[in-house]
Image (cartoon, rainbow, N blue to C red):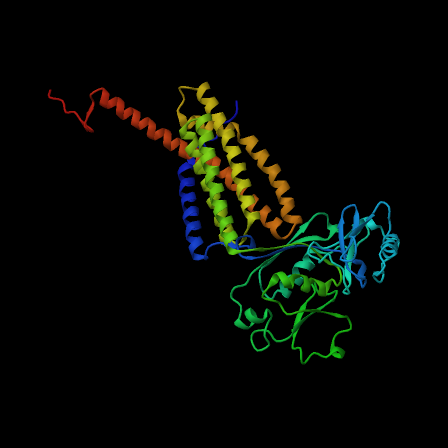
Length: 477
């Protein structure tokens, strides 16, 4: 027979501890100034960029207009404005190399000049060609760049390097960099929070004013001893090239008040002729507020659905206990995020909802065992039923939590940035979830049952004439 652990002895102490944690979290929210909101909840710019070397450039000096379109299967040139419009397709499976593609374009369109970029082999595969989504498709006298990227043979861009360049280049504005796809694809999502507290000079000119709060340029020296490379701010007038170190400096331009225009410029200083903008969006404060409202609605809907499910499957007593457990776990995790000043963004919301689901699943398992034991032992005191049920599900709870924790711990150790915060929040939430189910939810159910038993005994006493109007009946004998 499995040994029954008397978890009920800790119910009162756990209730006191949870009260302290919840009150401390609420107080911390006001003392710490609320959440450390990420760019997901604030106005800012989101750009999806990919680093890919330039393969060739196209210029047009003939009559009419020429438009370049492309997709995953090839490129299309459309000539209009002079005579009937005509289109020519250049599928990659027919023109397998960059050299063949460039030669065919020049041959079919008189006035079109295609030039391979220095260092690019004409034998490079054309299937890796790509263009920015925001690039003007109309060709003209200015070189139109076409990029290419071979994940198997290209240079891997380090996300830490991108993050460092952006943070210093944006001059203190909040920047979040996320990697997308495989490392060799050099695909990143960059979010920049709009800074509304900038000097008036920057608001008018879109750049730092020398007389205001910026005087100089930033140099990033590619020193192997510096990890990451050090940014050294120097006065522009006093900068002498001969006095610079032997290694070449990378000049980071002054940050701009319009980060959507500045992201590409900052990145191109470090990675010239390689930045391809795939998507660019501006998130206004109204949308950020709408997102916050949606999160609140989502959490409230989750609580109502859990309440409804637990009431139908079990009883109201169980349902209220499950909701209290969800609220308790949510407050604990949110308090941890506030106190540690972890960035509160959509990743944090995902971690919070994952924790609530994990905790609810564990609670439902314990509920099912409690209901089963009440049927097997109908005459046993309810608190003993709770202890027995928790003891019988303890192995399952420990094994599930430990195995899940190992996977989450790997995420925490081997990742950085938002994923590391996600893993840390999950670990805190899993520990809180086990604690909540074991002591808080079952403790509340025991409290509910004791109140119900006392009420039933009081009703029986009144019915038997031992009590009247809440006072003992005095014997006349």
